[in-house]
Amino acid sequence: MALEIQSKGDLYSVLESAGSRLVVVQFYAKWCGSCKAIFPAFMELTHYFHIKSTPTFQFYQNEEKLDEFSGSKAEALENRIRELM
Picture (cartoon, rainbow, N blue to C red):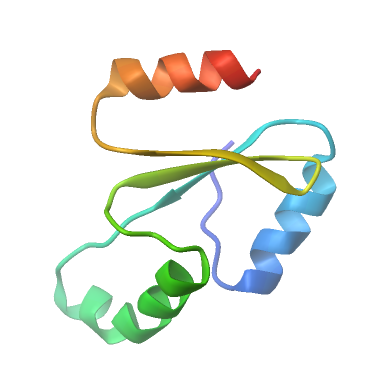
């Protein structure tokens, strides 16, 4: 299931409700007019979660960050998810 997170509160709610299920969080940026308007909020989240490049995926379980992956290699992302499940 894919969800769009709008705030830190949304993220914490999703992590809490997921319990022991693995949660994968992707941070991304679209370089368009409406995305530029939300850029300050995006930057706040990237600084808060220490995102240095996009796409970045973070993996959470039991409300704790397990790992992080940056890049666009689908096979590497799939392998990381399999390792964490």
